[in-house]
Amino acid sequence: MKRSILFIALFTFFICGIASATDNIILVKDPPPPPIPSRLETELPLSATINASQLAVYFEPTVGDATITVYDAYNNIVSQETVDTDSESSVFISSSSWSAGSYSVVIIYGTTTVRGYFNME
Picture 1: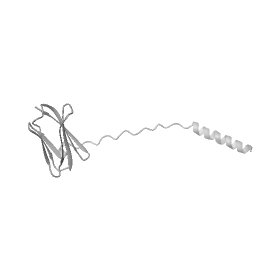
Picture 2 (picture 1 turned 180 degrees about the vertical axis):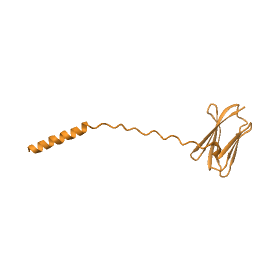
Picture 3 (picture 1 turned 120 degrees about the vertical axis):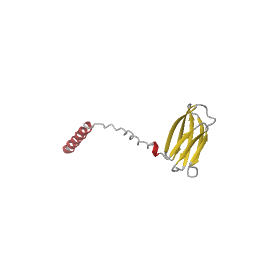
Picture 4 (picture 1 turned 45 degrees about the vertical axis):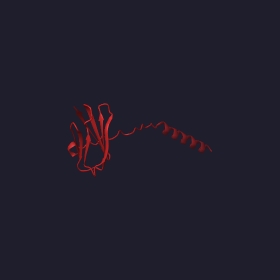
């Protein structure tokens, strides 16, 4: 019986010693990996031009469905169009009614988003 009590006492002392020697480990989530550098502009499968009457977007090679959205300086949508570039590799959007000012065009296809900025005079 004394042996059992001694064994329990030593076991408890041993467990308490281990517990008191244990430090908490603070776990934090890894920061997200750095972004993958964007492809160079010359490598994009599209280009765009603007003049007083139209915004033209050219897809070469085609990229499937693409949404083209034009925003004014106040972030209002002034034009939005979704096209299947497999059947239309060029898109022309009338800009004749747009006021003078700064604009941005956002083109989304697949998981890619491309932005461009221009001014209308």
